[in-house]
Image (cartoon, rainbow, N blue to C red; front, side):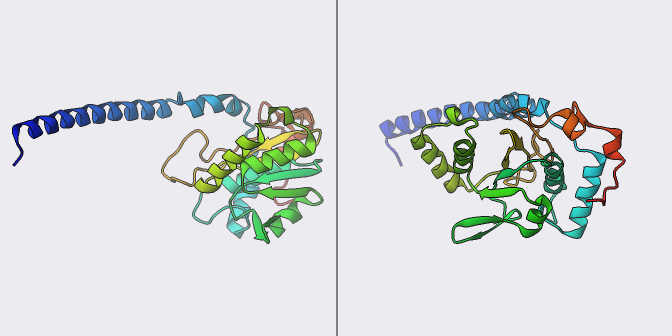
Length: 242
């Protein structure tokens, strides 16, 4: 049994707990609604990127299906067609490029030996003579890209901030959006992957293939696209011709 003073203190604390719980529930509900309506900070930040999305062609879709059927990387057997389709789009838009920075912690893409990462042999053959460097952290990969090419170097955070980001990345071990800068007049190519941390969570980025270009080396005339649409000649290609 508690005395009167103790009961009074416990009652007051219980009231405060209920008050905080109510406030937390309201904040959580508001956050969920913002995510649903794509009005949260992440969605609004990425809105401009998605407006420039390049839709896959019929040929790329057929090649992605064939890749999945054959069991060729990238992509998991139980996952959607996202990774395969992303790679096929990358192959299309990588023509004429000399070097690619691949940043992902997905083992489908690379093999690690003595702290060095090497692109999967099949994927490397598909890229031909394109030089590929692999990283599993955005902070290190983007810093190397910027320092090697000069592109975006002025926008890089200070080294201490990069070290802090790297530490967070290493601890979380999560990198759901591979970032693929491609060097050819310093264009950048990015492609998305489904959210693997929660397969039941679907956002704008899940199962969505897109490419975003910065710079001028990739133009509609060189890729056969206008506003994300393929030309008839592209879609008429035999999907098995490679």
